[in-house]
Length: 147
Length: 429
Image (cartoon, rainbow over all chains, first blue to last red; front, side, top):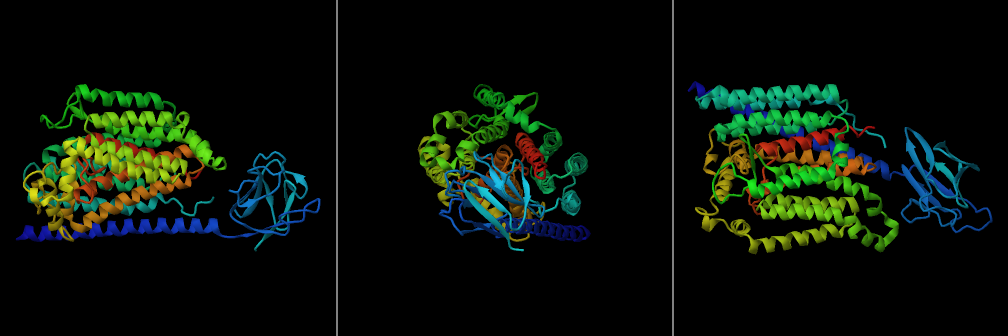
């Protein structure tokens, strides 16, 4: 009689332990899903705008066009870029703008003709801010942040 | 990209504690109901498991700052559970399995903490692969089956009282080979600007040739040796890995067609496959004959109901070779739906964690592809056998990772976990 009671208690404890483990595992699954969703959201969030300005020679196919600024914005001639530059002086993968630790950085992706920030060629990633002019090929972009 | 999810090595202590409580109550319950050789059969494996957990946990905490703690905790829970299930089902095998577990833990810690171990896998890939294939070939000449019965597949090598299954080692080596080779070709495989021509170029023999050759040789030997479960696993994992590396959707579609085609051919070519498919379609007319095992397994699931019969209260030993391939049925009978759900979510979490790691490591294609391949091996293998035991897919003779009896399988699974742990430390750098 005594053994049966002990065995039953042990079964109940086993069941509770299993249930706790199950809840724990489901919690981890849920948390992973949440953090993945946050990351996807962050990548899709629009932080600002890149405005194409009038070309140097006065003719631009992209004049005053506005492009969304994402956490990782690529600029270049290839259609896979976030901002496609229809200019023969731009490389296929020309430049990259990204957000790192609260600051926006501009990086040249070893383009043929270089990327300029406010008229100066850049050789290494530089911090950029609201109102900066980025030149890719013959086209100038003005950075407008939303906040 | 910043990591929102901070690593918290401390927070998983409760998981280990509850795992230990779970295993302890089960062992106590077992030892109260069966009075023969209680210490050696039941308590010794539990103590060994506890030792392995403590050593592994502290070793990892000390040597690696930011590993993924779940990748250690889940395999440990499953292994301990497997030990108890084996002790209950086949007490004579439990000590051997305990020794394998200790060995496997040491191997896991070695692969998780030794620097450059992933680079070895990449650098010596041809030597490793030729070695692995050589071992597999040698089973054609020297292969044995631990049950010593004629007519069974001879997939093991016998060395000084130890049986080893080379196909388990080949699994890791092949995934390492595929990952390192495909990651070197990642630039051309992912070259979107080339368009249609580029896609054809990517699959030209110069690029896909070595991969197809090595994979083809492995599959041929496995089919020759009638190790069809592992062959199926290789087939599926290879196709998904190729898809992940190249991003071409039609590979998955074509692969699915190929799998079905291969299945139809195998149905007419091999008696084993014919039997398996027949009893999968309708086991009931032959419940006493060829389909005995699967029907008994379904009975076990049914009698387990929600909370299970309780350990040592069910009758899972009616199922032949329950301790290896069919251990999932024993879990269903004695721990019920609850046990099944815990097993399922544990494997799901293990796979999802590793795949997430692969996504976050996309900038380093070798690590990314290796994590994908290893997690797919574990995930698809467990899906194949769990589905097989439940008669959802035709039965393929693969083990359930961590839970099933089988030394080489346990060792291989732990080495995979070691490699995944190693990759998980690369996340923050």
